[in-house]
Length: 266
Ligand code: HH2
Picture 1: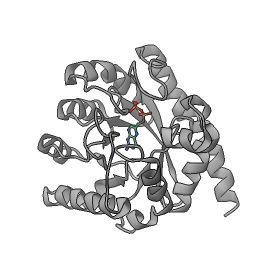
Picture 2: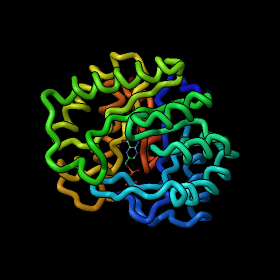
Picture 3: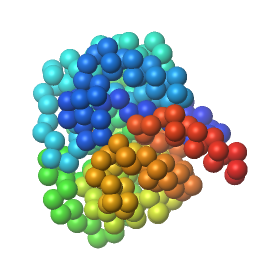
Picture 4: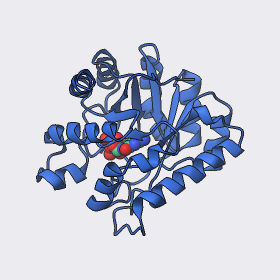
């Protein structure tokens, strides 16, 4: 199983082998370029590289499992020789094949709602990142409503984590993620980051993905996701200050630098 270091935050580098991701769509939609980028992310200090073959940006349409797998399979196969690979999928056949290839983490943005995903998870020793999302990517940003977003997200993550354990999955394998930007308004995202401690309290390692997301664009008035680095670093450090153990980022070199200076001054 992939063990998280106890004395520092882990960096999960994002590698989207998709034509349409919001942040880097098309940049690595070529196997050679994607593998090169993945190796670069490890060299820049990523503890994990998270490979995705379907965009889950707001409004995205699902991709059939065969297409998703054909995008990620050669990349996962190559990158497992360089470091720990996570597969960003909610489809059981994709997760199963990537685990056979040597991936160490299954990152499911639907929070293991599918019983087939739980079955695959049970047959492996993968670490499991279970994320909160309200609804599905196609519709999740059309007026998301919560009573209290932080307690609803926390209760959902707690229940899903309990469900996994009732299916004989060890607690130590479970990571949780509030799903910044997945069925949340600007205020919801800001509340989740500023009150992250209420989710950290559940006792599972907390993963946070803020990198380049649209809530940062809203705060700073920047349309282009690739010009949101300063805001991304700031939001990432807020998450770390509030207890995040893993940060999912596109800009690994800059994130590693920020974390080193942060911890040197603690
Ligand atoms: N965010 C994205 C995708 N996967 N997984 C976790 N655990 N947490 C996140 O916040 C998260 C995630 C969306 O970012 P990105 O991969 O850059 O975009 P896209 O879904 O368009 O490929």
